[in-house]
Structures are given as C-alpha cells and as structure tokens.
Image (cartoon, rainbow, N blue to C red; front, side, top):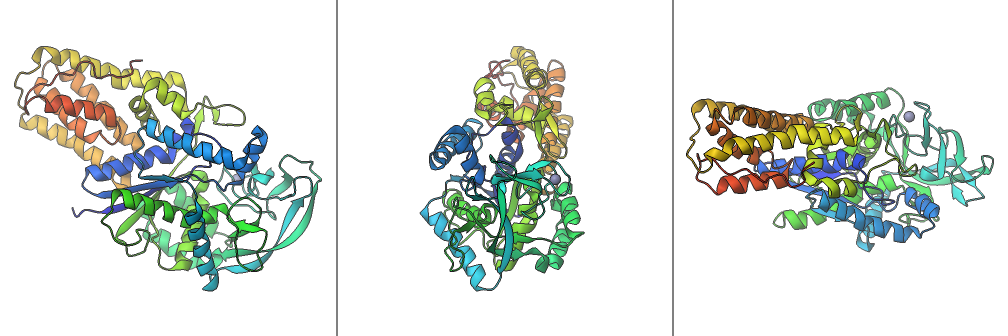
Length: 503
Ligand SMILES: [Zn+2]
C-alpha cells in the first residue's frame, strides 16, 4: 500500500477551563490514537489543535470567577497543554492565537469578501442595555428551535442544529433580567450556505464511506430545509476585529475563525513533524487527507459552515473524514463545569496513569452512542481486562523465562487475525477505539489462559501486542517491546512488574 499523508485536527477547546474526562474521551484521544496508528502503518500524520480563546464562554466564565478573560485564556492554554501531555496525547501543535494568527484570519476573510464570496446582511439582534452586549453565543440563553431543550446561542449541544437571534426560542440575556433587551439592526457579513446546496449534497454522497453515520444524518436533516446564512461577523468586543469598512464594532464569528485558525495550527504541526514538506498543507493539492475529530455538537460548523467556506475559497482541502463522538456522561448526567459535576482529566490520569485511563476511555468510548463514566466501572474494567490477565501471563511465563519457544504456523495464523482486526480498527473507513481496545483485551485474555500450555503463543503474542497496541497504550507497549527485545526472537521474555499503577 502506498504511503498516505493525513492532516488530523481535534476541535480547538474553549480556554475557559482545563479538559475534563468527557473532553479527553472525545476528539483528543481519538485523533491521537488515529495519528499514532497511521505512523505505525508507515503513513504520515500531522496532529494539530490549539486554544479557542475567542469564544464568548471565556468572557462569561471569567466574569463568574472575577478574572480577566485574557489571563483566564492564557492560564487555560497552559493547563490544557499539560493535561494533553500527561494523557500522552502526542499532538504536533497546540498553539494559542497571536498577532500572526490574527493577521492570517483577517486576511483569509478579507480575501473572501473582496472576491464576492461573503455578503452583507441586515440582522436584528436583541441588545441588552444591562450588560452592554448583543445576545449571541454565550451571551444568549433560551430554547433550541429544533429539539426544544434549554441552550445558549448559536448551536444546540443536544441536537447540533444552529440557531440565531431570530430563531432561538424565549431568548434572554445571560446574567440579566428577561425584559432587559431591545431589538437592534446590524449589518453583518455572512456566507450564504444555500448557494452551495448542490455541492454539499454531492460531497456527502461521494464521501459517505468515511463520514460517521451521525454526520450524514445531520446533513440530511439540514438539507431537507433551506440552509441558513452563516454569520461570519457579529457585533461583539471579544475576538478578532473585522477591520473592513462598515463593520466597525464587529469581530469574526469565532466558529468562522476556526477554519483559517486550524490552518495556522496545522502549519505549526507541519514545521515540527514534516519540515521537508513544501507549501501549505491545507492547500487542496497538498497531497494530505484531512481527518477531523469533533464532538457531535460541533457538526454543523465542520460539516457545512467550514466546508462552505472552503468551497467558496476554492483552493482549500476539504475533509476526507469527519469523525464525531457522542457525549460521555458522568454517573448518569452530563459533565458540567458550572455545576462541578465533573472529573478533571489531569486528576484521573494523575491517580491512575495514562495507559489505564486510555484503555478504559477507548473500551467505553462514546463513538456512536452516549456512554457513561463511573469510577467503579473504570477500575473494574482496568483490573479485570488489563491488569489481571497481565499478572496471570507474567506468572505463567515466569518458569519459562529465557527458554526457547518458537512459534508454529498455528500461532502465526492466530496472531495475523488479531493484526487484521487492529488494522481495521485503525483504518480511516472503520476507525474504532472500542474495537482496538476490545481486540487487545481479548488477545490478552487468551494469552493469559493459554500461557501455561503454550508459552510459544504467549511469547509471540506479547510481541505482536506490543507492536499493535502501541497507539492505544503507548507506555505499556513500550515496556513490553523492551522486554521482548531483551531476549532473542522465539524466546520467552520476563513479564513481571509491568503494571505501573496497580488498582
Ligand atoms: Zn436542539
């Protein structure tokens, strides 16, 4: 198979807090395992993300905590970087917006505007005199016009459908009295998504095999009705000022900013991982395949808004795959920073070690359906499906350590089956953290059960597991590989003392 090149992104996290376990189980772990696996298979993979500092949620959280939003974002960027490193997320770039970033974003939209791809629209925004803010994003609360749940402005976390000042039901100004608003007309910049309808339909027909089913269903729901205009600018102070005449007092919609923003982050990743590649990896002809990992609630932005911007631009990569995850709940309800119903990723990883956490989050991954984290289920699965078989395997092989145990053809065939299943779990079209963890746990259980009768299978099985499970369990795989390398091939390695965080 010819080597492929993948540009992998995980949604830039809002820098109003550190990552909790729900965040970690989603795009950050998925994109990491995918990128590591592609490199293991001989392909190139760049993994990029960065702090999403210009979200209005940074402002509302800073206000709640009595902090300066600039300081809050800077602190959270550092915390998130540390947490990713603790969880062994091998990301090539996690950048924060700087002056060059802001200039690139502004240039991207100024060019689109000059090329006639963006249009002026007069929108009516409720304006809150108490807070001095227009009701958008985190500054607005109400109910989703699609699925009716309570939501903030712009996007519904529950169904993923967009809303705006005109469609959000019962809008109120966050942190102010319900009757504090008055309507004001503002001329903003929009991308008319309806103009791209035919190309969206063709695009998702052609790429159906590499899109998660929930993405296809969402796009069908959206295409069943007229597509909305996507606001590229809005009246707010927090973000990147538009800098085009007639749009004073406006910044770029932070979700529009994300597309050129990811392009800047990817350039940093390229400089680190592929310094010999010439030119923009985000150019349509770069040879890279774009693979985007995101929580389902961000689907609208990636599947239609960003794709619409890329089609309007005409020279940009479009996603080969959009890999969504569903919500990961905690003890039966949503993770919530404001209600303090959460477990910080750094606390869980600090207490139990990165590999144990990665193993369980993969095994229990909310890849197609909501899943539920409990610490009891976590310790049970790690103890019974990872530690117990490893301990049994080490004990069974101990008397054979250093002895020759050459693998027969039956062993080779059995382990090829495992290798095939892992390749399928790591492949773009069939990527599945659950399958990778499940197949690895099943092999481990088999090796432990058969080790006494068949030390050759156990010895060779451990060698293959060390190679195939490395994207998922990097530390354990490295330790196993080291033990295997310490003896000649076909010899039983020493396997005691491999569990770094016993439960
Ligand atoms: Zn909804």
